[in-house]
Image (cartoon, rainbow, N blue to C red; front, side):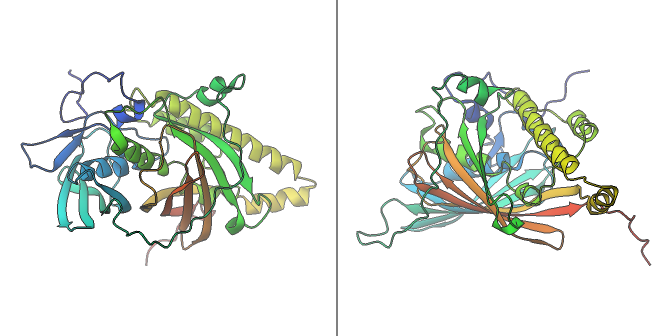
Length: 367
């Protein structure tokens, strides 16, 4: 039996002159359907434990599709997304761009990502013309926290960054602010960047798409992390989700291993803290009664405000800082700030998602 094709067309060979993330996010025009319709050139990653494809791919490819319909002197400044249905990594995605408005200073586009004719993801994007704000401007920005960027030249740095990871981008923990405080006061920091060097041919569109792809990493998971609840609470659960993977791209296989390794490390640290806190049988019983596990975690919406779209390279280290000001009613909200290597605030992102805990009692029958 022939292998089932998961892209509309046969994927071409990987382009060695491009960064891995450029290959992952490559789009192919589908002119037979319409002038502003595109499809994913390569298979998309289905993360362990997720209901569908990695959301960052839909975000980034929708942005890439929209940018193809906008003049080069316009840059995206905001993007508002909704995850409608879980994307299936075994089915091609069609990205339909609608040219909503073309003004002198602002351009508006909407993009629908569809599978089997149904929308799985939708976004509205706004683009602004370069230098259209006038000579006199109101300007301010949150400064980058005083942290030391990763040193690639230090002994063992390549192993530290690349160990178990060969996906399109890499990350490193940068600490937790207010670790022992209330959940709403904690700040989780990471360094992120695209692997390799983004090609000159890709231009700044490739850097913007790469940034959009990266913004969805570790995002809604912040809600459980500020409560010190691991996403996966046992090796068996990790193994189950790993076995459920569908069509991970060749570029993402090692990245999956790296992510699982990090989750296991977090799980081990959390277990150690629990064991150290078990001072008596009464304490043990209390901890058991208060034990919490994530039962469901799904992104609902995602917004990106691009503050300085020309002032960064996605293949250089960027700092992200995430916080969760609110959680309740089975949902959680997360805010993310991103700074470039030189300390420029380049983006602010928001995401709300479903975050439900496993319940001790079975659901009651409906009356």
